[in-house]
Length: 149
Image (tube, rainbow, N blue to C red; front, side):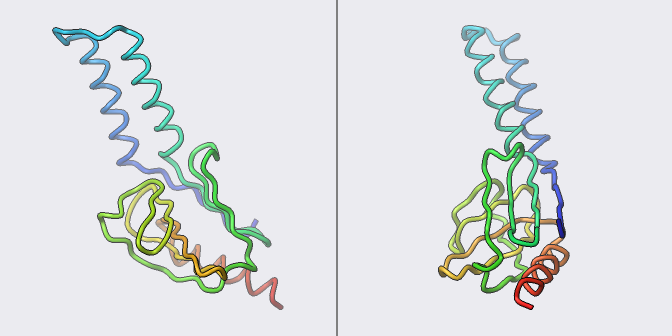
């Protein structure tokens, strides 16, 4: 493995923990109560979303670039030979976090505005959010150079 980095979305983490705590508080103090199962279902869904979307792992190997959320349920993998160009970019704030379809193509992002954009041979683009854009770009450049030499 040439590069691996896992980034935690602190704001996402705090938001979900707050939402879970608020749901618990409402389930205890609300004058009109839903069935306990409804609250448990909401908390379970939020815990699942927290587990899936609070971390983004990016790997560069001698063959692929891979980005996956949490436990790997949502994964994108690109062969190095299908990457035509790599560029460090800055996302507008309104692109948000998570899995997004942007005007520049699909994006995986868990925190911040910096990303690396992959220009694919198919003409499609894919952005990977990272707090280490230069290191990620450099690792991808080195991997592509190694297979083309």
